[in-house]
Image 1 (cartoon, rainbow, N blue to C red):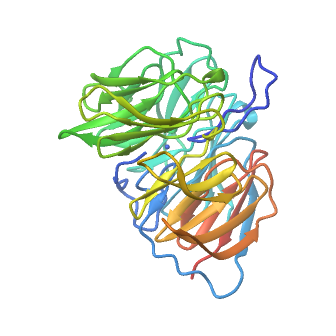
Image 2: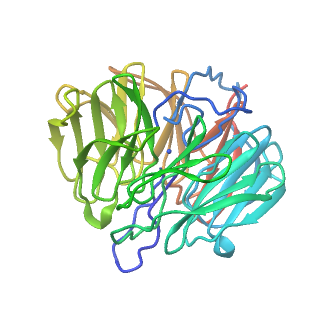
Length: 393
């Protein structure tokens, strides 16, 4: 899912968050070349690849206007799905090969921030006016299958709701209230809690043989049992304007949290069930919206306007690469995108980064992670330009 957008009462400059997990679950009715949800089929910004870069320069295949918003894209079965705040909320489906429109569906929202999740011939999108609503539509036609109103936040949710839906077994997990799980087929609640949501996507992981879901709320992280919603533990994490948008990263029985807005980054050990702080780096050492990922056993993240490889033992960095933005990894190659449309592709390791290709897509105000499928990257900016670029063979 994605970013803070316009504040309702604050004059602060707002980041635009994106945010959607960590468990390696491939959505059904999608193939290995699909990108069915926020941050890809593994929901963590990393796919196996390989990525064989084309011999020539990357080339733009098509461009389309989809309306303002900060959602990224899902690409499944030759179709592309995204979400826009235009027209008071529009779910958009395009032909992924040509960029031509297939269908649109109205969904009430003031912020097109959440990336759709696609599975089993259905598209799931979280929209929000005063309170959030989950829409489930037919992936082929856009016909509404069902919609479900969700708990309103108990605190002042300045930037709406941005955490993209996460699909698992027969459930849809949502960062709404204090966490919600709905049945995929009907939208009936499996469990639901009142609370103050954040802007990150739910993150699935297994702990002591139990499937769990981490929900980064507006002022704390809560871990619940995935099937029952029963709370396992929580970690207080309060930021200015309740901006917690970077997906938490679970590494065994350790938990990495990252935010801006007066916080930073920290590592917790939760082996005992009572999270213990191992280290923390304060204000300026985190990021407002871009989530990190684990690649080759190393943790990479954004902080202080840089992309960096983190030393988990100390909280320091092995190296830093100037420039913010967002990133995904395909095989052993990291694709980093700046807000000004600069794209850098490099191989990375604990010892450094090896630049392979750089280009500019001619778009600015890009504050969401790209999607990748079949050697193509799909970029979206906040004003609604969406472009497809061929980078692989």
